[in-house]
Image (cartoon, rainbow, N blue to C red; front, side):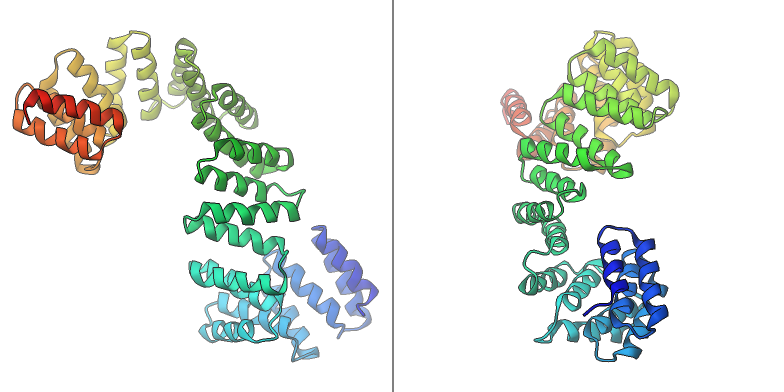
Amino acid sequence: MASTHAQEGGRFLQTGQTQDAVKSFQKGLSIDPNDVDCLLGLVRVHLSTGAAADAEAAVLRLLKAKPDHTEGQAHLAMLRAQAGNPEALESLKALAAAPTAGYFERFNLGSLLFERGDLAGARAAFESVLQVSPGSTHVHFELGRIRLQQNEPDGAVSHFLRAAEGAPQEAMPLLMLSRAHAACGQLGLAIQAATQALEKARGGLHRAVLEDLFKLYLSAGSSEGAKRAALELRKLDPSSTTYLYLHGLATMSAGAFAEAKDVFAEVLRQAPGSWQAQHALAQMHLALGERAEAVTLLEAAVATVPTDPGPTNDLAVVLMQDNGHARVAALLAPVLGAHPNDAGTHLNMALGTFPSDKELSARHAKQALALGAEDVRAQAEQLLKQLGA
């Protein structure tokens, strides 16, 4: 039976009170230097805080007191493998594969393999943990992360749901659940999970959830939701031009172009070299019929990022509307060099070269037809009909 100090330290550790946990374990060890439960508790608390050297010192004391302690052996093998010892990794694999292997032997192997990018190995190790601890919140969370990285969002959803149920006060499982739902295209469920995460999140995690919510609302077509998230982010960091820019995007998505123009103009005043702000402000000028101002801003953005499809294609469209087709080919060539499969750029190249080089125009129209979405393909088909190609 665990000593009183070991039990007390364990309760502190469960509630995240790591300093109090260390004090309790050390009190127990001052009474009995070989108290295995206190030594093991000390190892776990140091591992939880990332104090590798302290954890190794504690585990060596534990193994001196009880050399056959398998969890202690697993912790030592993991620590030494993390330090680059290849033999330690093999020892950990052997411990995890033993018929009597427990939670930590298997979990440590999964964690180490995940750190090293071996997703298949980590997944197998974590799935083996479920054989001995099927309801483990940590294991379900890790398996959710792996399934998400392996492009299996449906599987990730089921694991993050289990993790969220097992840690109802934690925001991170809900945030990851939201991301898994989003990867499945389930924007409503993603927003619901992120909203729940926001109620529990603190500090940097609170900001991360708001950033996710902004993107989700914008993708779902909820400009008001996106604006609320952007304004909350601005409260967290009033000096951030990034959050001011997000405010502008939300306002633009609501169709309030004059208001959005003022916001993007403020971004540009605070960050004069921002081509994104130049591009967004140009789009607002275009929406309001202010073409001269838009062209000036687009020219500046293109000069900064000549291979980015966004401002370059917008400038090409404006030029063609003003019969400036002659400039289009030279303008778009660097974009296609960097993005050879960008259907919109191929379409604009086809339109731009239509008056001067029918063969080149047809070639790019065919590329747009092959690569584009429905609207691009429809325009490409119409152009090919005009070309007789």
